[in-house]
Length: 325
Image (tube, rainbow, N blue to C red; front, side):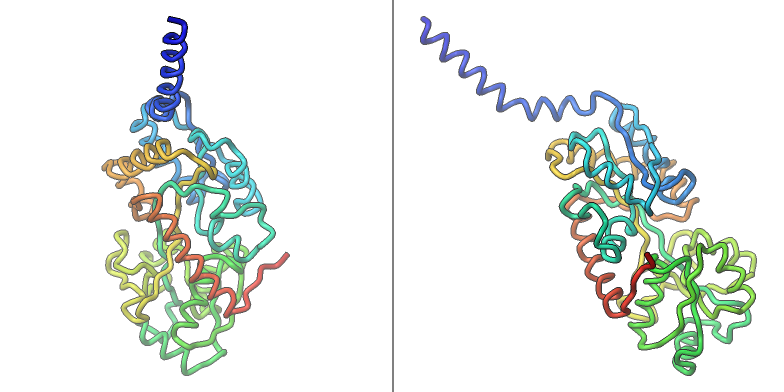
């Protein structure tokens, strides 16, 4: 009898071990989820995170709280998530600047975008737009390319800062077209735009959400968007890859967890996020802000990051681009 009792207890213990992961996955989430945004409130990353977070809470049946933890160009908030418990209760909404370009430009960043994080889902993206002053002789993208070729090194382009997506997008364009221009970095688009309007800059790659009001008001001329297909917010502006085959450059936003997240929790979060992006209200809000919805699996997101890192690493290396310390 004693032997049978011991055997029964051992069997139940083994069964409990086997079913624990399933039970945990079913229980998740049983408390509020914190979404860390590593940038200040009101910025693009914050806006995207807040649009999706509310619907994510509905899908998961739990409260989702957005917390801004800004500083060091997104490093502080990102590192905090990398060092948190991989239980699915602390996740990060980050960008291409924190998880592809930043680590390439600054090897001293205290985290690895691949080793210290679990990519959960590609959330949304937004292209840049190629803009020129109204005084520019270029009315189309082919005319701009020809204009630059006829004036090698004599023309300039502005950007919101060295090493940002708009700067690197322009550098990639110049490399792919075999052209040369002088880079003029500014401390933000707000300072660069007046000089573009006045004709002191010959070209700029800029966030479409920032430039679109100026384009619609007829203050600057748009020649192309950097997405691979017409952008939903401005379908009349042609894609740059129509003229430079293979060109694409997007600012993307993605959801990450710490490294070591369990597969059941990762699967549940990914499914809930994908479902959130099917909600008509979420889609309408993203479109209004100038973003295309993402989606897909964790593996697809990880692959996308690796492919982008290779592209930007080449641009940075070939252009000998460094950031000021």
